[in-house]
Image 1 (tube, rainbow, N blue to C red):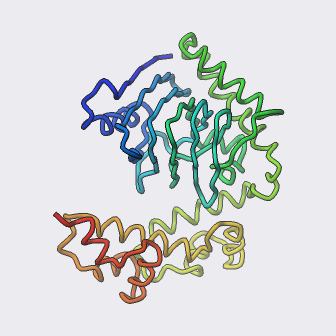
Image 2: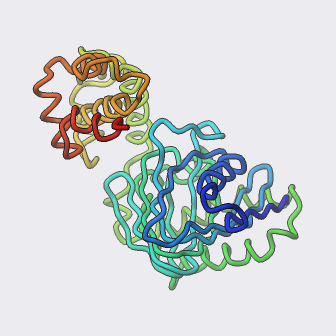
Image 3: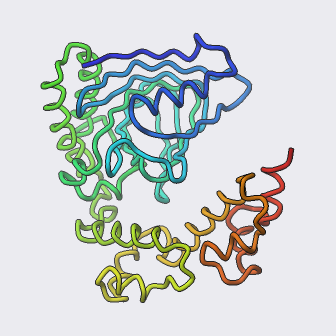
Length: 319
């Protein structure tokens, strides 16, 4: 496989972070946001091994917060799952209402196409990117088990950790054909490790529920600006009964309508932060994303983000 090494420490301090994010985007086709923590200068080093289907990276990073950029694109249709083995340091990772404390020797999974947040001290990790559609074909329940600590002391978790350690030791010796075969095999071993988690029966939704939930989310995102968007409209468009629609969201962290309001608030917040749209009033932006009551919008915005829409806009657009 093609090996590439990037060391931000060799660059001027002021340009390190941007260069790091650009390198991630170029190699793996992902857009993340990273913010350094503390007074320590940002430091990053990555040894990446890139094949056709297998992409992996050994990373050393100074303390930081990394999160998914709303609306970020991914190189592969459907995005990637990122499987990470923590070699040193500690992290708190969160996604879809789940949060896990990760320490040395632990493994966790994240969906890079969905919102997530990671806060760490100085860490070293070995990470592998897997096509999401391939992982879901092997283990449809994977979406319900991101941001969960995988115990690697015994059983399938221990086998998965051993495989990752050997993979990174041998990556530079693998040809493209071999690496593609390994990429096909990894989701099966990940599925075995996830399937052995004690709460897997409660955490994992059915394949059909995952399928319908993704259909609903795609439709809702395309209709967020429609003030008539409601469960009955969604059910008709998807071909489900209103009862079934509510049922497939019953185990989610938010109800369907709560999730819709949250998505609308995020879109409004993003537009309020744009200088190019500062000529538009707060109410105009709220109306454009399906809100029909400015007072209710303002209350909901404050409840979600801790500031009124005007206070937020002033704080981000001030000279």
